[in-house]
Length: 172
Ligand code: FES
Image (cartoon, rainbow, N blue to C red; front, top):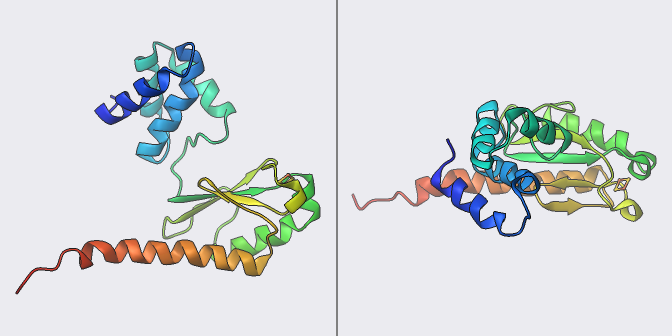
């Protein structure tokens, strides 16, 4: 069942779409935002809320590559493998990411922090090679730049992990 929050966000989005069929990608994205990925249960929840069948929703979800039908890491790295990026060093970057994270394409790092996925053109061909993490675009990449970017996310992770402990201090 959709949570109250999911339901109200989908309701708010519905004002921008002519019908539920047009709304369904946004609804799936909302569920994914809250649950990390879209399970069969998530598909069924959205289908029920929009009056669509699971099969209809499933076909949309599998067509649209930003809907994740399997669990993913906290940060999904979409590495462009289209022609400009390929020419400008895609394979070198894929190998570098693989070594740094200990994963191949389609896999999630052991710490659950990163999933690495190939992606079609990200629209930054004049600054290839490019990748996207969450909503952030990164371009003109090389291994050193990749290391900087990963380090930034890993630092944020460490800070987030420390936050509850820091915020939990009591006078003894
Ligand atoms: S080919 Fe990679 S951004 Fe266009």
